[in-house]
Image (cartoon, rainbow, N blue to C red):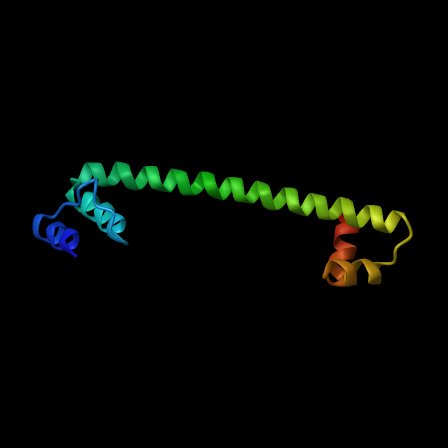
Amino acid sequence: MDRWVYAFKNNEVLNEFTAPGIGALKEKLDYLKMNQGERRRFEAHVNRIRSEWGMVEGARQEGREEKRRILVKSLHDNGMSTEIIAASLGLSEPAIRRLLNDG
């Protein structure tokens, strides 16, 4: 409790403070201390990071879809019916047909 009182009283969180949740307060106070130029640069940096993470997540999703397409094609080529593939993978039959047609 003393750490929180100190933080609110002095508008700063010392690095050695470890109270639950106080890290978020430190981030907010640090942000509020920035001037307009620093805030713009910080927000641009955060937006770049979010964009990069979005691209990474998109690539992961594409990889999962490609693996799924390869699996579906392999099962189909080995004689498994679309209905059984769909039931086994928890997908609809139209989704299985799309995966087969995309390859």
